[in-house]
Amino acid sequence: MTIKLFDIIEWEKKIQNPFWYDEVPQIIEALNVLRSHDKTEVNKLKDVVYSFFEEKLREGKVALGISGKKWNQERKPIDTIIIHHTSNPEGLSKERLSAIELVRLYAPAYAKRKKREPIYSDHIRNGEQVFWPYHWIIRADGTCDRLLNDNEIGWQAGKWDINCRSIAICIDDDHEYSAPDKKELEVVAGLIKNNYPQVSKDRIFGHCEINLKTTCPSELFLSTPERRGWKDDLLNML
Ligand SMILES: [Zn+2]
Image (cartoon, rainbow, N blue to C red; front, side):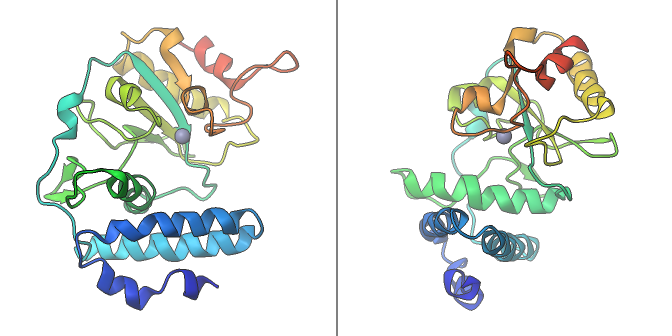
């Protein structure tokens, strides 16, 4: 199954063409179809695809733009914070995260654009493009890594206007049906207090509040009449 949906030998050739991204929507569609009836198979296929792109990015073998649209020029003053989780219980390396978002976000977006040009994220580290969607990622041990700089726009909220004015903070864990522990929430709160004191509490949102199609960062983020959500715990720490 996995072999048929993503032929590595074929893809080694495809990624040499700067418009390789045209075929990515088909992979995403295949993942969506598979997801509805075979969760194990979908995870296997994701791992094959993301490992492939992580390795090829490392080797510099994916055809990408050397210049392109200056996305960061659309950056606006920061007045909003968006909270995410990676939904990955094992944690994601920076390299894997970059590969995932190249495939999941940038490739389909470029396939949809009228303008035909190679992918260019406008986020460069050591001369190479990165495709991180978040500004900060909080690890399970309570440490945090800086990903994007504040003057860079993260493709993360599902709404461009919000992306332009927000900072994305991501908890690197699967919190779909659980709350982060106090230590993790304190790190998030500390980040916000120290770096973005200008953002008012009513401009701090979960990804699910901006994009109703996702439950990120958690089914338990928002309070309901029956139970208190962990968003309120976070806001209380500010
Ligand atoms: Zn999210």
